[in-house]
Image (cartoon, rainbow over all chains, first blue to last red; front, top):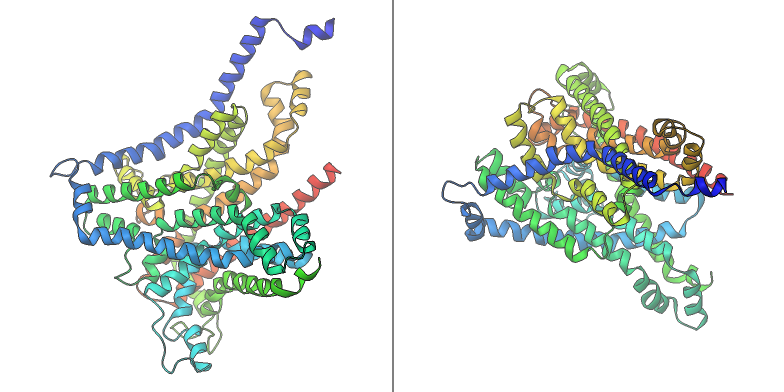
Length: 294
Length: 270
């Protein structure tokens, strides 16, 4: 009887206990909520107000961006760049993830380190490394000349090519991790069954393994695409004047042309693009799970 | 595993190995570039020398940039660990539907393009006088650090047996005592992992810093960015190698801690 009494306290006490618990939960969440409201949402709100405050009227900045051939082409280029980088990353990530599932022990650790280390290394340092490698007298050109692929150094830097190389290099790990996770989930017995029923390894791969790992491929691709849209440092350093991305355009509005409403409007257009991608791919992307793996 | 382990997969594995090599090897190009005797960059150097390291460590502007980076990263880490741990504890107590909303809000600074966050903070910090200060920069970096703290602590919290907390409460321990003696030791590994990654996130951060560091809080990545936009100097390669070395050390420490953790968890499960 005494035990029963302690297990279910009278309703009033239960209610006050629940209230105390709710207060405690709110108190724990308060600091982060205040911080995000004041240092993230409020500045973005200010930016929204700014985007609507052109001297020529509230929607003038948005109209200027939509009507100008130059600005439209920057956004189209940003999208195209993101598509190309996403396709290359996904194609390269698949065999890398496959290798991770095939090795054990020491070599597994080495392979995993190869994927995880780049997350920790500054994008700026990695981009600078590519600048040194792709230089006119850099190691890549020296190698190409040594093997006789070219007689004079190629222009590998400050063009579309170097932007692709640099962005693929930075974004590749984000594609590998989700694909690797989906490969781990594949039931090996299905592969054995396909094998046992006489399918060639090619057929087993194309008809069983690949379809089962598609969710991971989609998640990786979506993630890379999302991040590629907002890229700034890598295209700014590795690209030429003709390789303008949306982020570089926003930077030039703020720092060179000093037109804040345009910068604000352009960033909201960029944000809309990101949110559209997020909405379309929300079935595949669990961003939190990738972030934790780092 | 029968035939599959011979034919096509070998090709796949070789391709995978090449991709991993592509991923890791270029990162280290700055290291030989920094050990050059000449005053221009050459890989590999004709004559090795550490003279540019001397230059770096005797130049007050590089050293103060390094000091600023460490100061900002420490502030951002302490701040994001404090409010992030509290938030993770709160999120764990929410009903599932509200919980995913709260996690979404915490993660959103990683979704919004960083250029957008940068210009919004540039605009706001100038009006409230935090432009060009270590405090302003640390708060801004904390936006990007917070998600990692919340996620890592959250993972540890999920592993904590709720019966332990109930037992402590049943034995008469107050909330603070329960946290100190039961919850905190359990989340410590996640907290350490989150804190390490938070530190590196802030230490490496460039985009927000370019916009709001000004002259007062110029960090190592900002100074490096300003340098390499115009010319490649061996000193820039030294600065890159310093950043690389520091983050590599933290990476190795974090991986070892994670491995030790996994081993303990496995031992406890057994």
